[in-house]
Length: 79
Figure 1 (cartoon, rainbow, N blue to C red):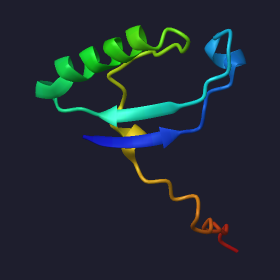
Figure 2 (figure 1 turned 30 degrees about the vertical axis):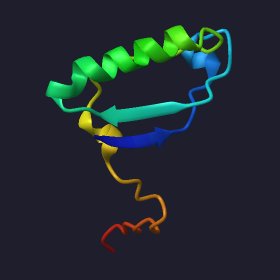
Figure 3 (figure 1 turned 30 degrees about the horizontal axis):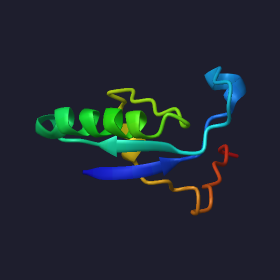
Figure 4 (figure 1 turned 180 degrees about the vertical axis):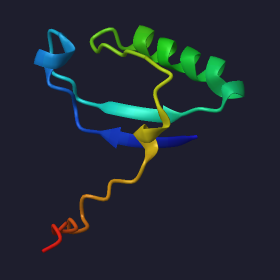
């Protein structure tokens, strides 16, 4: 399973009454999906003070590498 941590979503966009503390994306093999979903439900039941929300599937770009560290290329118009 692969995982990526994304920036928390602003609650004005999500409509959630509280702030998001973790926005994670998990690449789960189809054969493991049932167990993963059950784990999230069990954690939600064990910790009712936090809201756990499982959504998806999401597009694969959630796992693309962030290339923001590299300088932007300058495009110049022909003279």
